[in-house]
Image (cartoon, rainbow over all chains, first blue to last red; front, side):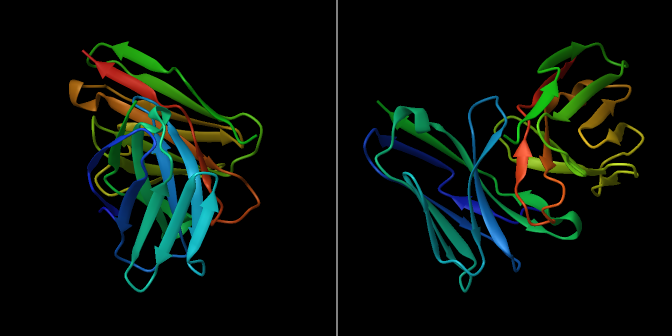
Length: 111
Length: 118
């Protein structure tokens, strides 16, 4: 079953604008991860935020985590056309901490 | 570092044949590897967890006799789609977790294999 649910499902913005994507999950987690996937390619790990962290930065990325609301957001600042991709949140659970992925958000950045 | 490769990157086969996909961790050892499949415009669905030296653990609804997984070494896991049918056409992605860093360490993903069954 899907653990993470992202919204919006599709987002189209102009280059230079900020993009905010949200993810909600259902069960308790010890971390939440965000991945990017370019069309027809594998996944690239962007950032991991632990359950005891509220905010984390990596370059133009900012991730927040609200465990009380079971939600996370990914902010990409000053977007570029190269940021066009699908973005997934994922949470580990169960034996082997296997990842459960959300449905993904398709981000299109117009040059 | 932490590079995962898959071979082949794409394959077209006839219905009824078997196809083997390799997943390799190039610069690290991976006790645990994961196999996912992804249909167009959909998310990744975990198929099975591959553990070196032991049997794979399959997710509910995944036929273990159809999707054979072998994790013979710390750097290689293979997925064999047996008697492939058109509905098996999908994008298959593997990931590997670095050994020795516990179950909470991140996974590194391969580039995926596009399987088309005619």
